[in-house]
Length: 217
Image 1 (spheres, one colour):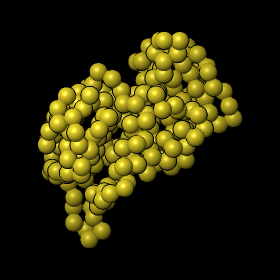
Image 2: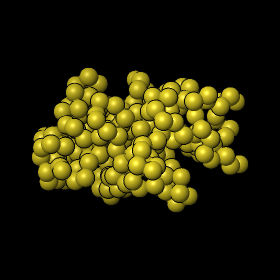
Image 3: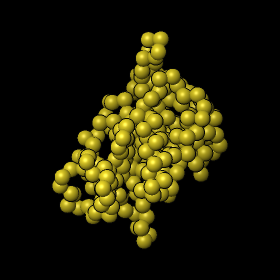
C-alpha cells in the first residue's frame, strides 16, 4: 500500500486486516503519509460511522459547517454532536467549538467568545486551537471522540463528507459500524475500523480500507 499525501494513493478500494491495534495503527499512519487525519484518543471503538455522516450532512445544510472549514475534533452520538472546526475569518484562523446547549458545561469558557446562542446550539470561538480542544474534551470527556493529530493540518469538511459518502457507495467491511481513525486527501482516503463479532459469531480483527487513486497534491 502506497502512502497518501506525498506519494501514490491506495487503489480504488483495497483492504488489509490486523490482529493487533498497534500493527493496524502503524499501517494506517504509513498509508496516510502527510495527509490530514482524525484518530480516536482512547482505546474505545471510536465514532459511530452512520452518526458521523448524518451529523456532517445536517450541519452542512444548516450552515453550521462550511465546506472550507477544517475539522479538528468530532464526537457524534445518535441525536447530538460536538465538534471543533477551523475557519478563516478576515484572513486569520479561528477555532470554533460547536455543541448542543444541553451537553455544554454550565460555565462558559473564559477564553472563548460566544458566536452562536440558539435554542439547541452553542458555539464559542477561540484564537488558540488547544483552548478549543480543551473545552471540547471537557464537554465530551473524550470517549469515542476523534481528534486531528500527527499531521500538519486538519482535514477539510468537504473532503471528510465526500469520502464518507464514497465509503458507503461500495462494500464496507462486515460489522464496521464505528470509525477508529481516518485520513482524507484530495484523491484518496483511508479508514480504520475496530474489531467486532460478525453475525455468524466469527471475530473480525482490525480492518484498514483505502479508497482512491492517483498522486496527492
